[in-house]
Length: 62
Image (cartoon, rainbow, N blue to C red; front, side, top):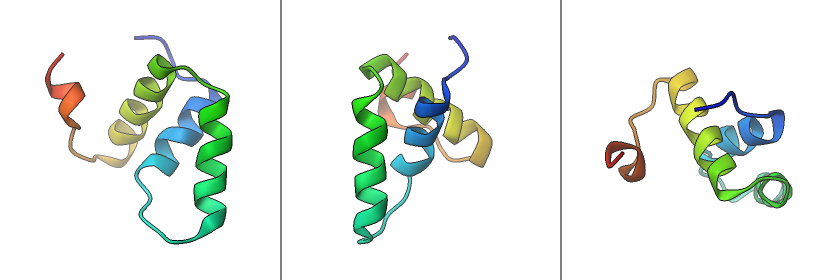
């Protein structure tokens, strides 16, 4: 898998944030508009590796 772009990394980090803060939701939406579905996967996988979070369902099915 290729190294994620800055936008993909941002999306990956924001993907794991649970909040009612509209600024986080808006930032996630802006990042998402800049990347592809594969980019989403790269970003989420990268964030999980950096933060030591468990793998999501699609990652374990690969």
